[in-house]
Image (cartoon, rainbow, N blue to C red; front, side, top):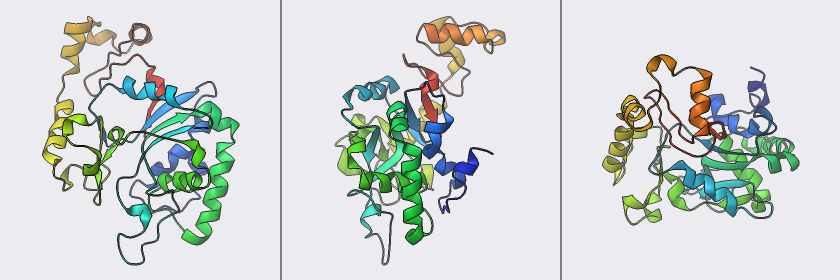
Length: 259
């Protein structure tokens, strides 16, 4: 409840409600010794090893603290319908479904004060957000473009209702992250939606128990919840989990935040 109060004052029309604003406060809510995180929306599908995305942090230079993919619709251009008035953004703006955050640098830049002042100023005219945290991130970036490292578009291929994501790729095999950012989710209309849907369903049907038993020799089901079990998996760079979510990566699980 205490964390909610940090963003509950912001009027928000997005269907995710208050949860859609929580990315703004990660510098305050996550441990102070955590220097960087990958932040993911829950409606994305990875088609590659997430460690590849983690490696992009090494490409940040100067004051770049946010890794984002450009928004793949005309939303922030303000021409989708008559009298459409979006929040300010740099060009097409950026989509916050996949974010690389350098928390240590953001804290030094007084990120909390930065986004609050921006939100308060813009809300005087806009009255509410339409795309939750994304509107506020973009308003901050509009004033401070040096904050952004622009990720290649294949790290966040967006399937919104007005998407232009087909301009991002020649073939579906090039894609690394699929973002179901339409309220219709799997029912969204898209030229390649069957491929994207099958990719999602394939991951959904993976049997984590089979992988744990035959490849890694992880302990029996009775031992899975023990602290020693999880520590052993982290040390060896393999994360053994029950079948709902399985991620194999050399980075710390605590450094990937799913919102």
